[in-house]
Image 1 (cartoon, rainbow, N blue to C red):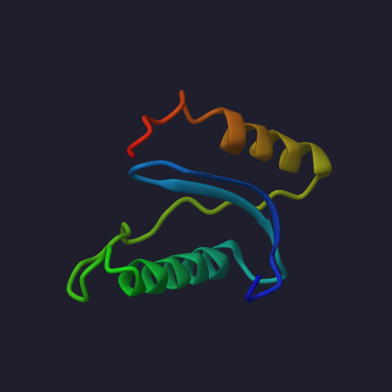
Image 2 (tube, rainbow, N blue to C red):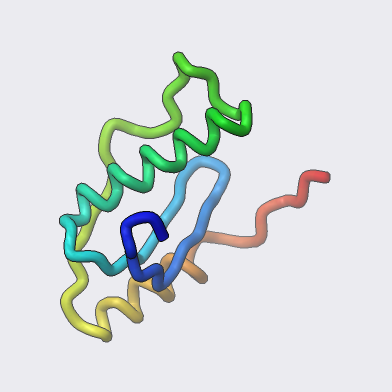
Length: 89
């Protein structure tokens, strides 16, 4: 929302997250922005200390040029990450 990204799919697990996003920036820049905003939110919520790091040094970034490739990526991100996570209440 902050940068005007088009979000096609997202899946957040306990130890990683996947997104399929459209933007004119490079995939690396988009990933860096997602990490920065997420880190800020985690710290504001008290879930991550100032000295803690939440992310690996890099991550997987890929260009998708056709609607077919985007649809395949969305299918993988939304439905290809394994079963339901346990509910913690």
